[in-house]
Image 1 (cartoon, rainbow, N blue to C red):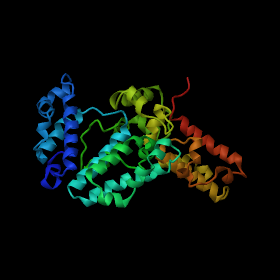
Image 2 (image 1 turned 45 degrees about the vertical axis):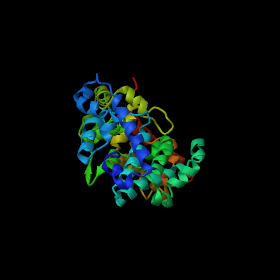
Image 3 (image 1 turned 135 degrees about the horizontal axis):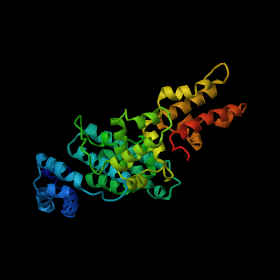
Length: 359
């Protein structure tokens, strides 16, 4: 915890760090004071809420007391804003600050690599005005020189300036190209911090449910490309719009990279993926080296791999470099368009099995 012992050691009581710690304490205490004491969970922890709503309570924190704050208050704190990606980036930056305070070089460098990767990925999106405006900051954030000498306030300034850009990395984060999952964020000294909290997004709760309920019949049907009946759809709606979260949460948080709504079946299939044997069987007729070119077979393999990982495949996704490494579909199938159409019929059928049957 940033306001515990390392920040108040004599070595850190500098003109620069004293106001930094005070700002953190003021923010934390005011957030605790703002908690609604009428809520059941807050009343259960009222002793800690009343104590840490006062800034002076943070003056002499030891590690044990910091752990008590995490255990009793962390899950009660409401999100500061609606941007899940910005909040996750905040945690990465706070982990960097903690690692610097603890002189934990390995941990520091590990989280810094995540920030540098995010900065470099944002630089590739230079057509976005907000990214253009942040050019100098992103250059610092990807620089080894900056991280080798950065002070705590300088690190926090990067956090403040960069967090608002994280929603431009939705796809990279969801596909773990930039990995800020709970498993990564809360790994501490070889032990994962797995307590649920407001930081766990709807997406992460849904992912966890699918991982922990592999044999759920409706999920198995999606995974194995079996059409779902009305009862299956009712089960999925109950699970993902009631147990995992609400329908409102789903609509608010689950979108494509272009902020379009994602149908429930397609979303859940993206979590289960398509079973590899099922995918290979579906495309088996197109893998005959005696009938098709090596490039065509390779392209079909890319389709199989994509479906195994992401569950469905939209035609526009075939143009992504990450789909086929730059292979041009028109060149691969220019002498056999009928073959391509037959392949896409199989893809369309797989996609359709992740959607409700037409009435």
